[in-house]
Image (cartoon, rainbow, N blue to C red; front, side):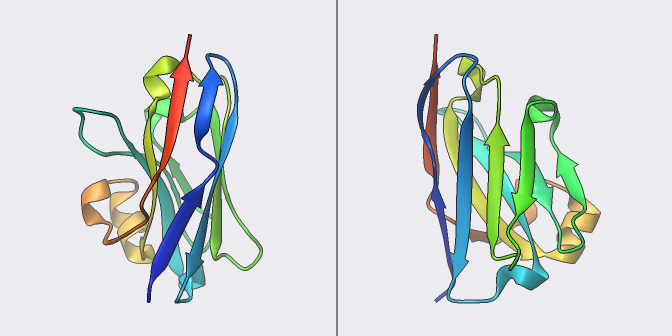
Length: 126
């Protein structure tokens, strides 16, 4: 069974840092593009960053200068390091997977991603 599991969320003060992780299981995600997305209450899900199997990265403007996305050596794990967090970054953060061609064509457009994790909550206060 295809499964993406996020971890690493939590509560931090404004200006703090968090590192989110995503692990794929039940299938080989090494041939797919993986990405991070977020959804705040009352808002639409939005892209944060994606990385395809060649290491090409797309960052959305919201966290572009404050986040680093990376994949593990097996390419079945995905990490998002976020720095200098702001209250506006508070949201449920999701990991998603899709074919490389989707990331090449659409970057971090959430509507084109089909496989999703359950999310990890990030709360930034202050």
